Image 1 (cartoon, rainbow, N blue to C red):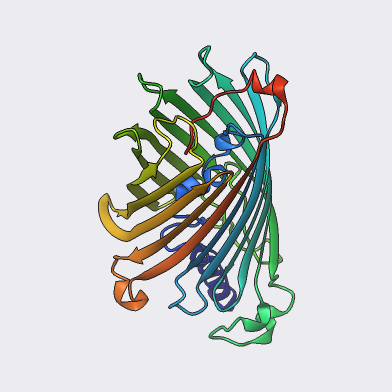
Image 2 (cartoon, rainbow, N blue to C red):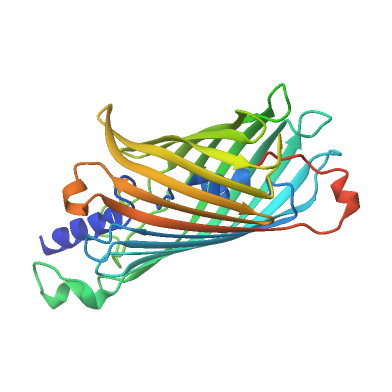
Amino acid sequence: MKQFYLFVFLTGMIMLSRTAMGQDVHLSHIHASPTFLNPAMVGLMNEDLRLIGNYRSQWQTFNAGYRTMIASADMKAFRGFGLRDEFGAGLQILSDKAGDIAYNTTDIALTLSYLKALNRNGDHLISAGARIGFVQNQFDIEKLRLLDEDPSLLNGELMNTTQYLDISAGLGWFVPLYNRYDFLYLGFSGFHLNRATISFMDHQDIQTEGLQLYPKYTFHGGGSIRVNAYVALKPSFIFHYQGPHREFNLGTFVRMSKEPRTYFRAQYAIYTGFWLRWAINDGKFQRDALIGALRYDYKDMVFTFSFDMNISDLAKASRTLGGPELSVMKYFDFDRPARKRSKVKCPAF
């Protein structure tokens, strides 16, 4: 019975150490974390190299809350099999710390993508990507408190660290509209496809049913629609499906720039936007958060700040505070004329 209670406690801890509406860490502003959303977005840029840093703090009114940091780098690796096809490659490091017992997730992943142009202009394209990560979960065993403090429960039967490999993949489709200034895109990604088992027990007497990580499937899309020469809408949506959890985000950025009618990323632009996030339980939509975001593009830098305002049933306990999120992107463009003539023309997100 003691082992059963411990098993239940640790299983719940694994589940609750992720975000409130799903097992996985997720970010609010998708435009600032494309490679985290879908491996097919790796290398999808007109520059040669992109560095991205994301920081998120959530639920600080509940004990120690969550703190998530993600650093990634991706680049155009080399030309593909066709004249306008290209390979992309990337590296991603994630660190997530949650709760009073300092439950920490560290994920180091390598990604590879292939971008294939479907027309001579190179602006109608499809992409495919794969990701393999090494993940470590650990917690501070000294901070663990159980109803039953029998030392035998912690005598060699409980580990504070576990590791596993994680495999993910994704697809993307990007198409310009008739005027060549606007575009639409759709993407699909699947994470934890190998369904790794997560357990802190140092023996095999317990059933592993329920300890396998749920695969997560993400369907997302959006576009850029020009309102006039200086203003454009950038709507987007995301649907996450992981085990019993469902989540849906819908909203838009409004971009304002002095550079008229640009298909690519403007050097100077200001964005403001709102998204609404719902949870879907038993087929019913339940409001979760209102997300406000500000973004500023300055030459080869992109700065984004967003904040979740909790509007779910937890609003009283959270005091409507979800969490702030900050992202910084840095682009590098090297002088390689031969590659410039053959590169895919990627839309600006």
